[in-house]
Length: 179
Image (cartoon, rainbow, N blue to C red; front, side):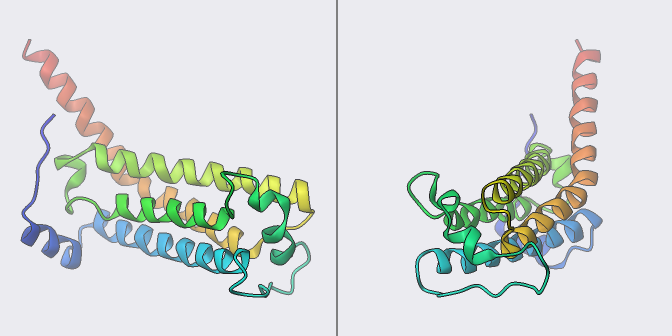
């Protein structure tokens, strides 16, 4: 597979100034990942006692304190689940920030991996929301904001991932025709 590696100077320029539609969408995904990370930081601070309570919107069905202090929130890997959420959004942001503006053509596996990751994030977030409700009869408002960020990221990731998949298919066809 042909992978194009940009110089650090070129990558810096493209990341900061490119108006390529994929780059604009990737910046949105990075921003949404940062919002998800912020939600994870707030939840983690509550789960470790730094914050003593989490304000909720005045909407029935939200009780972040109950959800984030529940057995459910500490049932995986002997840690508070906010930390896993934080690491998760960092990886998504990293994938969105990797490669230049034309990575669908230059490094097609990057946008495919990013899109797959956003899909996994969304499915996992929806399953966790189901578990939140099932076990607590309430939702964590912060977790649901992060779920919305994940779902929006899927939509934003699809155009670049579809183009990258087409690039790989075209390369495969070209390789077959040269045999």
